Image (tube, rainbow, N blue to C red; front, side, top):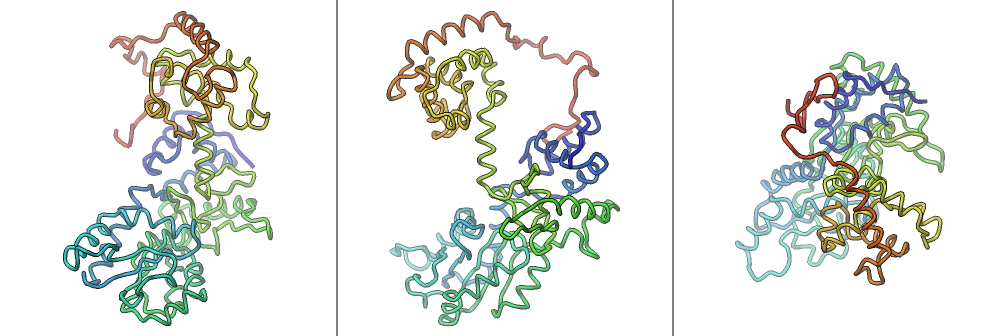
Length: 438
C-alpha cells in the first residue's frame, strides 16, 4: 500500500488549493504524506475526497453553537431556566463542548439579561451547564433541558445516554416543558434514528449532513466518480484496523455513517478511517486530540521549526546542534530519545544571553512553559545552564562565544530591496494563491 507523490507544478497547486478548504489546519507535507498512502492511480480520486471534506476549527465551531443556541433561546422565555446537559462521560466530545458554549455571545447575553430582569442578588447562573443531573439543586426550578454534543453520527450514543438508568429516572421524575438536542452537525440517519427511538418530544437544533454515498444526495455525484471513490474508501479502509478487542474494520465509519467531518479537538469515528486511522497508515486528521498535540510537540523538536527565526537572529543553529550533540547528556537513554532537542537549547542560550525573560522566550519560540521547561532541563543536564535555570554557565558562555564567531563567517542574506527581487520565473515555484487569495 502506498504511492509516490510527483512533485510537479500541477500536483503542488492541487495541494495548495486544498489548504484554505481545510482552514489551514494541516501543512502541505501532511497532505502529501496522506496522499502517499494510496497507489499512484488512486491519488487523483483521493484528492476529491479532501475537496468536500469539512474541517471545523474552534472559532467556527463557536459560531455554529452560538447560532443554534440563539434559536433555542428564542423559544425559551427569559424568566424560565434551562439545564444544558453535555451527555456522555467526562472528557468525551459532549463534555468538551461546554467551554465554547459557555463563552458564546448568546449564552453570556442570556445570563446577563436574566440577572438584570430577575434578581441582581442571585449568586448562581440563570441557566446551568452540568453532566450530573441527580445533584442539581432545586431541579423543579427548571422548565427546559438542552442535550449537548459536538456531532451526532448514528444517533445510538445519544439514545444510550438517554436510556442510562439515572438519566431516565431523573427525566421521569421531573417533567419539563421542552427537550432540545443541540449539536453542531447531525447525520441524517442519526436524526431519523433518534426521532424514532427516543421517547421524548425532542426538538433538534443542528445542521444536517447526508451520508457521503447517499443514493440520492451523495456529494461525490458532483464529480461523477462517486463509484470509484466508494471503491477506494472501501478497499483501503478495509485494511485499517480501528479496534483490536475484537479486531474491527469499519471502512465507511462507525455504523457505516459515511461522515466527512473533523473538529479542532478530534475526528468522530463516524468519519472514514482513511482520514483518521493510524494502523499502518498516515492519518490526516487523527482520531483524538492527544495524537494531534503529540504531533505538534514533536514538530517543535525539529530543526526546521526554528530555522526561520534563528536565521533572522543570526544563530547558526545547525552548527550549534552539532556542537551540543557532543556533550554528555545525564538523562536516561529513553528520555533523551524522546525529548532531545539540542537545536532548541541553542536558541534558548542565545535569547537567555540577550536577557529575555521566559515569557518572551516562549513567545519567540512558540513554546508552552512546559515545553520550555523541557529545554531548560536538557541545557542543565549538559552543563550549559546552572541550578535553578537562572544563569548560563561558563561552559554555555564559551559555547555561545564560539558559535557567534562561527556565525560571522556565514553571510546571512541582507534584507535589501535588491535581494528580495524574484530572479527568473522558471527558477522558483510561484504560488497561484496565498492564504486563499489570488
